Image 1 (cartoon, helix red, strand yellow):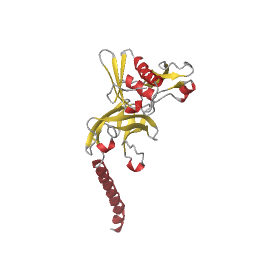
Image 2 (cartoon, helix red, strand yellow):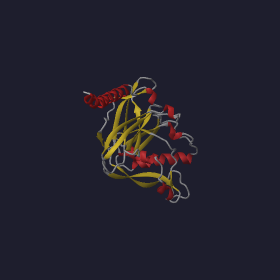
Image 3 (cartoon, rainbow, N blue to C red):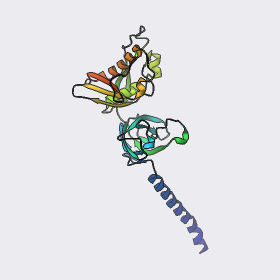
Image 4 (cartoon, rainbow, N blue to C red):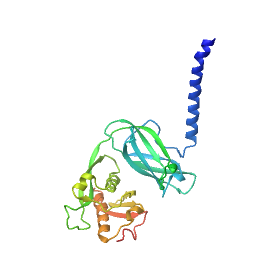
Length: 268
């Protein structure tokens, strides 16, 4: 009898531990600030990935919060933002939607990471949700991004910009992908070749649509016009965005807006 008790004691403890872990997991999921996520744990994903769900209004700042794809070691493979689909200034859950592209040439484990937009930068206010996923590779295509260039235009013609090639994953929203590449600014190699950008760092593309007449409507956040000065810089910004979009045959004209405004924007 004593031997049986000795055998069953560790087994019983193990069962209790498993039950406790399950209960804690259930409690954590139930109290999560994010729910109804379209991406499930262990799901095989492809790029670009559409992410939808609901998050507490406190997660948003100016109607958005960041998301990213990482590999199993935590290396960032792609970043983006999701946008609130309703009023975000609430403590209730708010529906969101967004798309994130990532670069992975091999299949493997990774994470979809959602983080609250924390403008304070203080770690005590930071929140994060990590969903384990299986990354699948995608094909690549070459697009152009347009920058000013000291070597090719030493006289500085303001609205004269030059193409640099980028290899990105094949996606349907190729115009948005090209603009997002442009917003990253020149790489170190491109800088060595004389390329530079007049666009502020941290600018977000909020939306891009193309009508039946070939006019592209590109809407950016207010960071696009922060601290800019001089007609030459404004002309360069417009030229970089316009030429990057007009590389595609379906786009003939470009209308730039900031938070939906087209009047009185990008003023020198």
